[in-house]
Image (tube, rainbow, N blue to C red; front, side):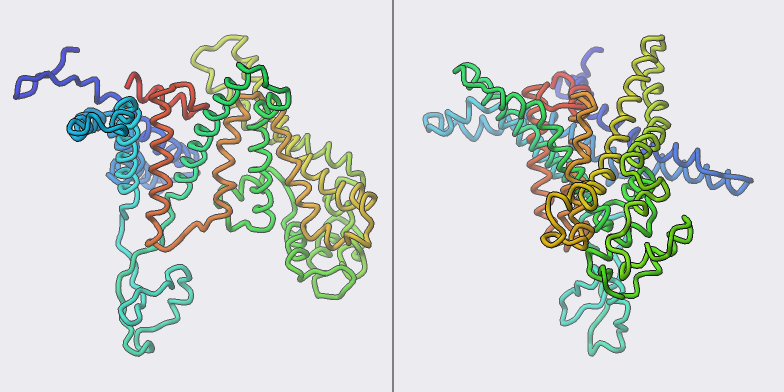
Amino acid sequence: MAPTVSPAGSPIDLQIFKPLLRAYALGYLSSTSPRVFNLLVSPNRGGKGRRNLISGIYQILFGALAPNKFPAFCATLVGGSTLLQPLIRQLLILLSSPLNQVGWVIALRHRRRIFTRFLAAWLSAWVGMRLLHIRSHSGKLEVVANGKPSLSYIQPAESASLAPAENDGRRAEATPPPAGKTMDLTLYAVTRALDVVIGELWLKRKARRAAAGKWTRLESIIGHTADAGVFALSSGVVMWAWFYLPDRLPRAYNKWIRGAAQVDDRLIEALRRVRHGSLVYGKETGQAPLLQSMCEDHGWPLEWGDPGKTVPIPCEMVHMGAGPSCELHAAGRFIKAFRFALATYLPLNVIMRIRSPSRGIFLRALKDAVRSSAFLGAFISLFYYSVCLSRTRLGPRMVSYDTITPLMWDGGLCVGAGCALCGWSILIEAAKRRQEMSSFVAPRAAATFLPRRYEKKYQWRETLAFTLSTAIVITCAQENRQRVRGVLGKILRTVLGGS
């Protein structure tokens, strides 16, 4: 395609806009396709259902075109990272020309390309984040005292009780809602930036020590198991949050874990009450009806569900009708989780390879699906078996009940043992898959330590973390195309092209 000529006569190479267009198209498809698919598979019956379906698809497809939606953010981030580079480069040349003999200017000139790319990506990330923070609707009225906004928007139930007539001159004003809707995106950017920086430092260390003949087997093992370790730690944090801090996890994440774990909510609630001190072994605290209802459902003696009479909760109740054997229960859990995962992974693996169908391709899809299903089955069975081992089988034999009581085991130690060990089942997966899984789970684990919503005056901290992290990732993708690993690296290499 011949370049377009501007009115001034200089040619404009339209190739420079390809990264922007690719990013916008990819952002649009990734944000609309899942929602349209979910809408299509949801039950819609009758004329009203069809009208709602058409209206819903229309809102999804045209709503994504708004400037504060994900496609515009992707285009701004990638397009700005490439289009701003010539301007920044010329500006740096102009500013540094009077200082050609200054030492730091000479050093900067040698790294001008990296600095130009970093600054362009940082500015683009800042503008993109500002777009995402634009609200689609107005704020709510909040009670304000003495001209200062109340913090009650974090707890709306409290602010609702304050009627304007009862507040001694307090007035209702529109106050900004809490920030934090982009927290997941920010944490993903931060974890990927850390992966890039730590990975680059590790490779340099390896090259240096290998050249000196000092590279050890221990360092090699650390390098090969780092992703598995990150996943094990992150998944352990997520599982702990699912048990004791479910509000720290997204609702969809909670629902998926519950579906995969297939555990009675009454048992989870009992363990939570033990940890919070409302259920105490050997004392009458009024908590017996919770587990006694489980006993009635499964035909167990009612005494098993009374923590004042039975210490600790029998393992057979933890097995939920699978019998008294912890080993058979773990095996049964593996089979159930394997079937649950295979029903999801096998169709996905087949669909991903359907463009070039062959017997070998489908056998590989089956192998990958079985391997991933085995990982999930091992994850769940190892969690349950670790809980049983720690609370009744192995734990009391290693440490007597005089030192660690049954209440302490069920108050968090047994769940902690499951959280610490279950994630190492990721070693079943291939190395490339381990990296993808660790980069997926790590941001969600980090999110459990941070508030989902916070005061808007602190939003600059999140913006700074996101912009710096994103600039690091994009600059590295342009400088060293293989350094950004996994699916994100492939996407960036496709979108950025030869920029």
